Length: 242
Figure (cartoon, rainbow, N blue to C red):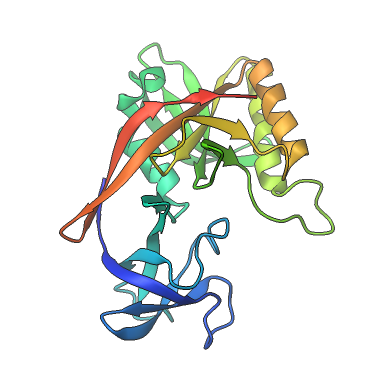
């Protein structure tokens, strides 16, 4: 999986001219430009003077010419676009031993109370519902998820992500094979842990899902850059510590 990118640095987020948290001012080719930040602040990584890699947008209707795709953190390039989680999963599907003989039947499937990312089938014609989460954050050598802030109405960071787990558990009870896949868009973690500190409710639900038979996997990837081309490489499945 390759994308064309250009080196830049963060000046402000939010942008001084457009106050949306999804917009940033960047310095690129000695010029200040607007860039879309699809992951907002990327767990606090998108801040002033940080090096980023951006792609150029050909859509003239957009307010920003660029999109922030990768961020430099502790000398490692980190995927900053959460949409890449699904793209990476579909591109590397058959490199995962757990899904080696699978094909994608549908994407964005409305089922029960959620819209899940993938419906797969294998050589035995078994149906497999899969939800994918992109993971950019590391703490004490562990990739962690989720991260963010609760508003006053929410019991957990993402009600939507919590519903995904509930429906994967229910589909498993109905006899389907179900999986929750964490795509870790950085090469430095040694394992994966639910973020009990920031979101105990989601983390405990994730453990419940695992104990109920929902498959939970964490796959680690490495982003590297050469000649303005960013390439993503699958490294390994890493241990999940509950």
